[in-house]
Image (tube, rainbow, N blue to C red):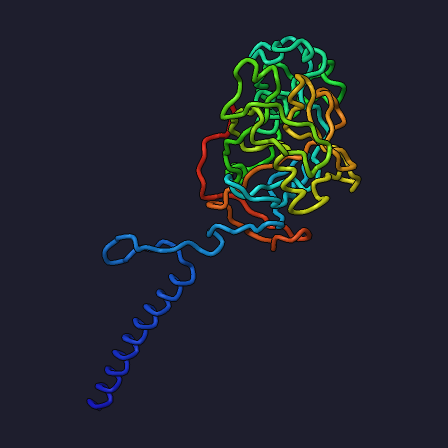
Length: 338
């Protein structure tokens, strides 16, 4: 009887020890799988831990597609079309709207850029830095509250059509984590005579940018042309960037609308020997010029993806199944552009 009690006691002790060992093993296993931050129950100190796979930055390769943000209630698809000193260049797969680049006015109360040449009163300005287009693309404002950097809204009567002074900013339907996935980048933008004659230029530029209609030659003297630095998240391609798209992906530089038709779209590069003409990509693929107040030109935005923070939750990067992601671990102030 005493022997049986002793054996039962030993069995119970062994069972308790095995249970403790099993709990330790399970705990280690869960910690290794989840990779979340845990606490040592005895000391209360944090133990070092890695992030889960879904919160590790995702590498987006050239040619791959992502979904980021919405416009008019629809997802926007972007393609990685190039890589340079600013990182991976993302271009909207299609044009997102048809809007004027800039309004005509002499009521340029904020920046006075229109007063640099009288033709801007009747045609609009080709100066990127305070344009209606740059103001709108980088705005999160609700409808009617976009801050127009030059002081002249693209309202009815100041543009040929498609007034957008009462639209919400382009970034209004992006989450903060999606906006954070877009880098703030400083890059050169070509300027025209009213700017460089008054000293609005940076670097070693000393000439106008040649006007070449052929995509192959459109950026021939880009590095020696007068230009000014600007910092933003969202922008239009310049002639050098659109040339890169052509080199990497051929006719993909020609834009299409939602119906799949080839459609002209604005570049941010002016016709620099003039004061009121903007360059654009024609539906045929040639690089042409037109008045900034023109209303039927497409808008095909671009940005640089912040791969230090961008993480995906679904998709494989293909055109039929783009990555879906954002930058949830990147904390930024509410975005504005100056």
